[in-house]
Each structure stands twice: as C-alpha cells, then as structure tokens.
Amino acid sequence: MDDDFNSALAIAHLFEAVRSVNRLIATKKFRKKAELVATVVDLLQRVRSFGEVLGILQADPSTWLNQQRIAGLADLEIDVSDIEAAIEARLQARKDKDYVRGDEIRDELDARGILLLDTAKGTSWKLK
Image 1 (tube, rainbow, N blue to C red):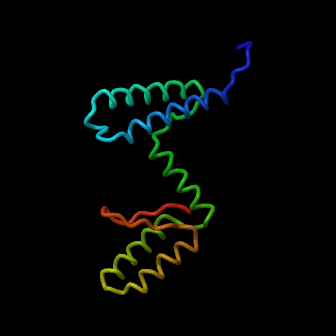
Image 2 (cartoon, rainbow, N blue to C red):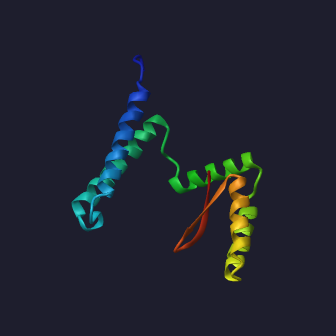
Image 3 (cartoon, one colour):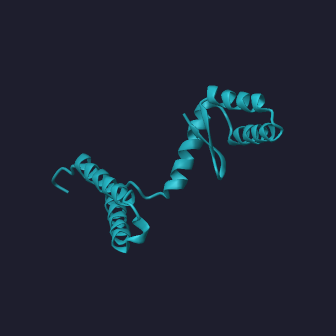
C-alpha cells in the first residue's frame, strides 16, 4: 500500500453503521418487521467484514466483554468466585429477611468497585 490508510475515518464509519443498527433495533415492533431485521443482519455482516480489514470486531462480543470484566477484577484484586459467594450470601440474607445484612453485602461490593444488578432473572454484577 503506497497510500496512507485513514483508519480513524474507517472506524468512524463503522461506529456510524453500528449507531444505525442500534436505531433500527430500537424501532417499535422491530422483530415483527422482516425488512428491518434483514437490514440489521446485512449491516452487521458488513461491519464485521470491514472490521476484519482493520483487525477489529472479530471476537465474540460476550466473550470479549467477559475477558474485560476479568481483567478489571484483577486490577481490583477480587476474584469472580468472591463476587459469586457474596451474591449467594446476599440472596440467603434476603431470603432470611435480613435486609440489613443484604444491604451490607451490596455496600461492601460497591466499595470494592462492583455494582450488583437485581433483575427478574436474578442478580448479576458489573464493574463500576
């Protein structure tokens, strides 16, 4: 390649394509509109293809995000098993109606940089 490759501009275009995908997905009744689903699938395939040229976006997103969480935990000097044990202890405290202890466990994790997320599917966590 004799010419400069404007990777910053290429990444900006990828970002814009992903923003378009997110806008389409946010459309009401997205899954019921086959043409929108097809457009999103096509755009995502193009983003991955262009990302391959740049050497990015090739890992499975959930695997990559999990690797980033694990790396962040190493920085905080805490292990996933410690977090899971704390979540179990908190769930048991809540089951026993010991809400004070449940809040203490949440606060202890929060002080260490871990945010607990309670959903209908259960409790998960993320780095602050």
